[in-house]
Length: 215
Length: 273
Image (cartoon, chains in turn orange, yellow):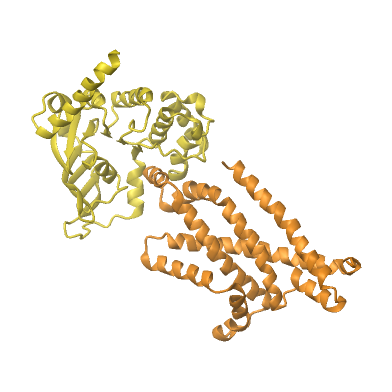
């Protein structure tokens, strides 16, 4: 009952879709981590106004459904800001900010969970707070944060499938395209699911290994 | 060595320092001056404010009011009404801390760096020192505290006493003119206390100026040039260790010292069986 020729004949479309998905995953993870780190530091700032801004940022993205935010970025943001934004840019912006809010929470918690004595010791040597952060706090916090960061990165990859609603030609978009002219959704979406499993199960395993090695 | 307070600039000048947490006043107007070469033991029961006072000296804790000067430079000056009489920035505070070493009760070694990297970290990051001279000095200091053969170990694989000796070397590598010790032996198993005290005694004999919060009355008696006794946030007695500890006139000090004698008395029958 499975007709695999549907897949083999359109393999190039799946391959191309996968490349696009991976591209968006890498870009939005890197940008998300940078945004997340900035927001985490803002949330830990001694200045109250900054902390409030950081808090609002996180709360906003944690409470708006990603799909809504994604569509809003593409359709409403250009009208509000009076700019034209490509679907690629809108997708990257929306996913990076969204992921950034979650990364920020992970990083903030990781930094705060670190023993106060570490910051004391760094300061007592004469380090400025940014030096203590770079040399002492972050290297240790990152190690503790490998599992949640890896988990968030995996969610981020899965979230890129939502880009297909903006007609970004990712794996899911290509799949629905193939399905639209072959009328074989069962084979097509089974393969999409398998591709994600094949990539993400080893990633999870790798993350767990990294975590064990760092302890 | 000579320890002549009269003709030297004080290394630490604390005056009228107060510190409150909410409505609880931990320090009630402390005046304390430490001259170069002095070894000052800060004693008192727990909750007397001695650790808070020590942490105020290098501004790990900010007083609610009062003045602090290190080596003649003011680093904190806040009036009782909360008005800052001097704007002292993060850069100045960091520069002051780089000349004041600190040793913590919980060691606070950096667990992601090996022993040698821990000792090299201060000069490397704070002073931007090149590796060769820093490394040579760090190895010398590790040899001095008896930890040379552990240079490549990670801190997690050291005993408490070893960790504390490394942390002393880490502080010394900044070439401080003053060392602060915050109950350096309180977290150690009894059999490891000696090795840390020995390191501190060597340092004191070399003329290092030290401010030591401790419960080791023996150390205070043998090594300190002056004992300062805190009770409920105020200095209630100070003087030579002999005066303060062996002939206490103050009721609080007498109770404190007697409690130690009493503990020893209680232990005696247990030790004889």
